[in-house]
Length: 106
Image 1 (cartoon, one colour):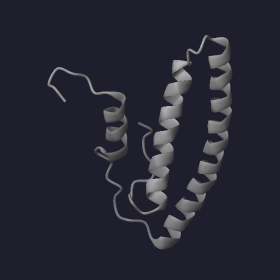
Image 2 (cartoon, rainbow, N blue to C red):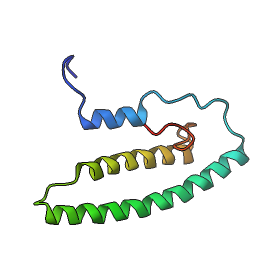
Image 3 (spheres, rainbow, N blue to C red):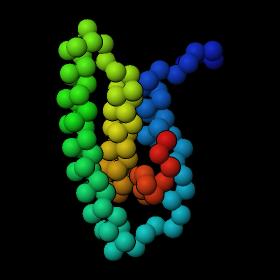
């Protein structure tokens, strides 16, 4: 990337997923990790429902708005996808950093 260029969307997303992460502190015990994993699984189920709803909403907006997406819904979809990826990384032990609400939603 050139010095004066701004990062593109993929660079921003990659940075949010793989960039500097908060220090998770001491690793949780297995029982506490199981509790967090179950809670995150429930949150992922809710996230899937929300994703379905905003997908339908965005499609309707595309139909009535001459194929122009709602930027806030598109950005929300990006944020939701990043949260889902961080949750999956914690659940599969690829990361010790728990997703929001245990850490900041960036």
